[in-house]
Image (cartoon, rainbow, N blue to C red):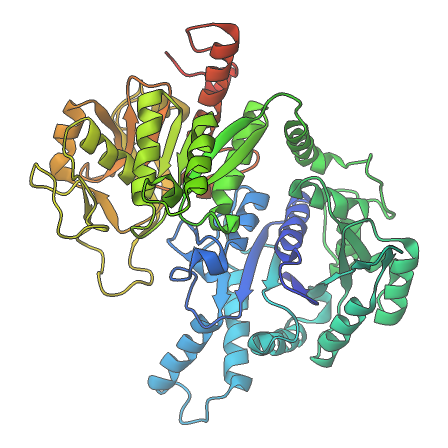
Length: 592
């Protein structure tokens, strides 16, 4: 087993996650089985109870793990792997484990300390998870890429750095490689690249007992030869191991950039990889891409082509609760990007704070601006969320999409909102609501439209929702969403990831379906509603699951492809004066 550890210095948000993902991707492309671990030095057990405004989205794994969004990047870059909750290590998990062992008397009366007990548990956890297969094959992976969150020198990460120092000696230097990501800023009008922050960061790392094998220099422009030589001299790292990772047109070009700097061959030499492919011994240049990276380069080129498309973009109105921090919807953004690449059309997201659509909005300019964006969008998407703020704005957005024929996709809360809107405005249940928002209010039919799931805890928030990968059984083969998922027979299942506490009330389903809203997908019991579609609409689809979590650059999520495709087809109809759906992509062609 080989280990590659990625640390960061100078400041947070420097790009460690993308560099770790890109490193794992190029190693996997060499034919080596690869897994990833993210270390988050916070005391939370997991990311499940953390605010999206503070930490970005909560990424959900197949096993129900609520983890850091970087694990989403790992899965998207690695393609066919499925990580587990234990691939995300937190201080809270480690301390909780040690305290439980102490209460059980497993330390035999010893004084429990950070060293050796905490550091030992960290090492055991890394070793166990690194040897767990994540690609569906038997036997352990060949390489584990470990990203240490935070910044070197933070007090929170000290136990992990000490554990990694010890771990290096446990596995041997020939099996352990350290990449340190540092910032090389440019100050003033002179434009000189400054190396002092990197020098100080690496000095601090060495003082803690770790020495980098590679220095990954983040900068706005390519690293100059002089800068590389200076960092090599002062940081005692070979010049070829000082890697410039400058800003590129899209994140999918980072693995290609690492290849240009000969990182695959350098890693193979450092860790003595046994490879079945021949690697160059010198940097290749941007025009020469080995065959094992060709498909990735083609995908990165498509992303650039779509981004620079001169045609008017497809505008998607994202009506959400956490629009102040777009990382709150990172996987949704990526899923839309994947779909736009598949359809080969540029896509732009118009961010709309849901509460600004409500007539009670204090700032009338915000209200008018929000509605102008909504009306100008080609499609509307309502993503997941919790709490009552902005719900009435979401209901108004769903109503606008339904009544004006706008392509619409609702996810999790978005599906519940779509059902509430339909019950209110089509069925006449004027106060139809969710138990989450108004516990005491029921519809005229005497039933809440959305209810709390009986098996879910009302008192404990962490890891108590309906989480992880679950089957959805389709009862319809002609619905647009069924065609997108390539459903050939009634009863066929698809597996998607979930994260919710509330569900559509099964007692009102029959009445809603009689009114025209189809529940085309249900859970394995047939009681829990999973997918809803409005029949006489170009594309009005909502799902209780989160399809964005399984979207991949080279395998986009069907509901998102459907949204982008429907928007494009409506534009073609408008521009060409056609009244029928035009099959722009045979694979995703939807019936009338």
